Length: 161
Image (cartoon, helix red, strand yellow):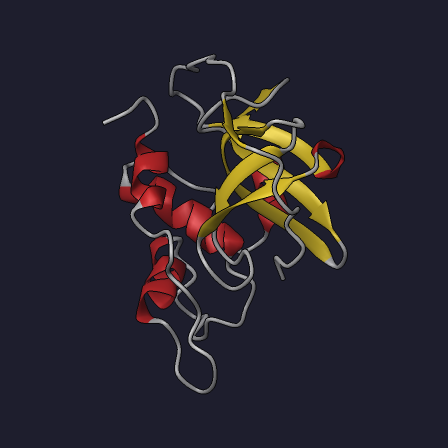
């Protein structure tokens, strides 16, 4: 177990994907229930905040309990810089995005473990200029580690809707 149990929990779901068509991935539907949004009954509704929130809730940390990625800008405590395990909130055309910072690329882009990244749970690279804020769970001691370079330059995330 690391200093970031929510990140350990999130790693278990790498590879989880939406189901195309009329069926919906039951694990994604459970994430909505985990954040008290069980009225959402599909895996097409943008679910990055449901993923982030479910990972927090599953390890005993209260999430924002909202379906909006931007809800995390008022959740927890503000960090001035990214650290492993923190939550990064991003801007995107048409809304926001949220996920867990895992490291950085050789050119300094953030590596983020998140849901609804090309309709799946995975780790993608994000430009720093898209960041709206970094957050840490309130009441959890901040582990101020430096971000490690975990990958060479990767293509940037381009689909989080």
